[in-house]
Image (cartoon, rainbow, N blue to C red; front, side):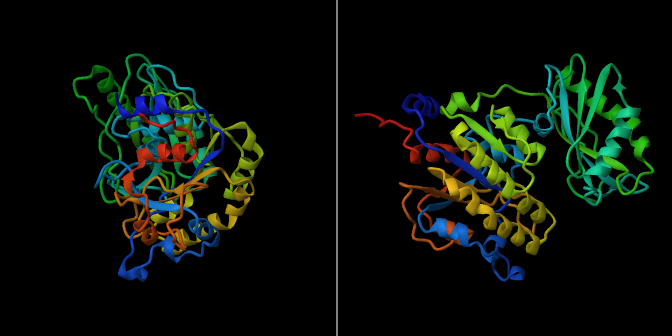
Length: 407
């Protein structure tokens, strides 16, 4: 019997509320330049610190030691799906989050507007983080000019800031494809190719991506700063077991960005739309408290500022989150986990493999006698270092959702 089958056999009906609160990219590393502090350690977080006194802490490996995860694998791990087993293209996740209904044979890509120089070299992968309104205007222009490529329909939908989605809808298409993204400035946009070079459906999809670039880039060539675009996570939608079937919990998602709504929808979570600030997200949690057993609440900004290398802004984002936390605590969940989906160290300006800190609070979590929730404190916690995919099982155990194993 594998572990998932064993957990299913032992699972009892839930009698309380569970909440996973994700400060995206909250983990960081201490450096001399930062005074040997991380943003989480430098931030004033009295509310998380108060919880820490009665909680257990630890660190989580998002995928495997040394492997840097994207947001998709990072969150799937938190939801209990082994990211090495359940592989989902970022384009699929983003498309679902934006409300697109994907059909069999659709191939979706997550795209960024970027800045290209005269030689086609990427000089800014995010086009200066253009405003959402500018993104919407550019997407409308592309949609008007590029409706089909070959025999495939092209569907373009704007997201937030510089992000958008492209869906190719036709016959005989499949992913995954490699990214049309160098993942750093100073290089040209690489061609997207089939991961499985022997798959004719993937090869056809790769040709469509190449043809799309040929017709779409001239449309925005004179726009500044967004005169180009990058595409990644190009794939079709796979089958994934539903969260409620896997864990016996009625789940809901309260997120702002489409990517995270899409992840939640992929595993069958209800998307609770509307809130735009973390305070509004917590208020929505209060309003929906009686309707669900499990809440996934996502806060984007530590990751965003970590990617910018902005230590002070990341610290302030964490403080903003902490200031709103008392709203959630008006109806404190029976089990509360606060963590990140990965680390985004300011010194690296990107995701990393460093284990992210996690705090688990319940009536039976026990106290690690720590005064703060920080990376340094988490290193001393009773949870130790464990794979992120086990977090949901620890949350269920703290909710008394498992029967005894054996005599």
